[in-house]
Length: 133
Image (cartoon, rainbow, N blue to C red; front, side, top):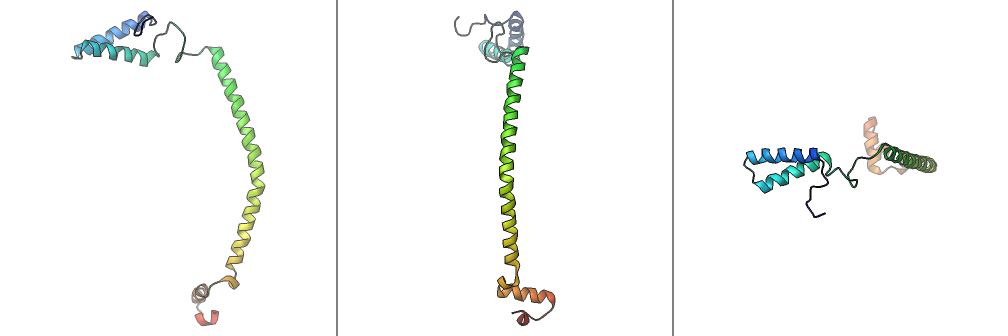
């Protein structure tokens, strides 16, 4: 079948393209451009010629069911993998959090404060800055 043949299209699609082409020609679009736009519109609306199978065609009920089943299996596997990964990481997170808290406590102790921090703290309490140093 030569390229550009309309044999694969149904009669309804051919009629639709003809009507679309006529309306474009009434608007002043050239014959060739009107035909091109008409068939592009038919292809967009119906997915191309429907007499044969191929890319972009509707799936049968059994094919849809098979796709759903495969998708469900993939999703279940992913959920299982992520749950296992989360359990492994939860112990690591707890120990990291505890370490961060203890280091924060150590930093906040007065022994680790700089002279400036001691003066600021003394000023907040209303005491003298030199007394805190």
